[in-house]
Length: 181
Ligand code: FES
Ligand code: FES
Image (tube, rainbow, N blue to C red; front, side, top):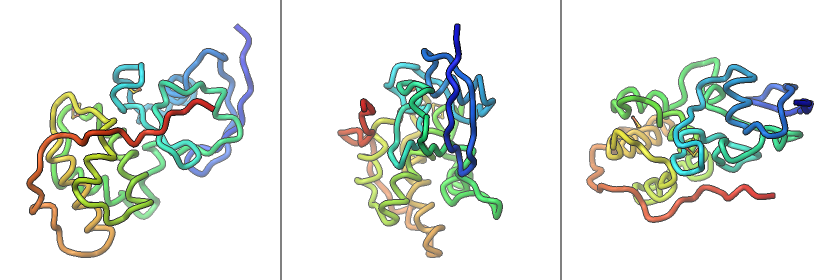
C-alpha cells in the first residue's frame, strides 16, 4: 500500500514519518514511531486511553488519522516530563498511588495537563467534568482526582489540599473535542 509522507511536530521536535492513509495517529505513534506511552484501550473513541494534545486540544488519537498530523503540533505522554524532572501530575499520581494496571494513566495525565495548563486551580467538580471522557477500568477515580488536586498544589508550591476531597463518581460530560475538521 502506498505511504504518505507527513511532517509534524511531536513534543517540541519536528518529525517526519511515512504512514498508510488508513492508519490512525495512535497506530503511527506506537507502531511507526515507537512511542508506546500512548495506550490503546477501546480503539473506538470511548475510553480516552489514547489521549494526546493536538494543536492545544485533547483528542482520542485512535480517532484521528496519522495523515491529519501534517503541519500540526502534538503532545504525547512522552512530552509531559521536562529535563528537570517529572511533571507535577506524574509526581502526584505516584504519590497518591493513582494507578492500578496503568493502561488509563497516560491518557488521564495528558488530559489533566490540558486542563491545568488552562485552569491551574480547577476545583474537584471541574476536574471530574473535564476527565469524564477518560475511563479507568480499575475504577480508581477518587485517587486519580486526588492526584490532580495534589498536582495543582505541587505546581503552586502550596500544601496538599487533596485530602479534603470527598466526592465520588465521574462528571456528567466529556470536555473532549470532537475532531472532525
Ligand atoms: S483507545 Fe482511543 S478512545 Fe479508547
Ligand atoms: S488503572 Fe487500570 S484502567 Fe485505570
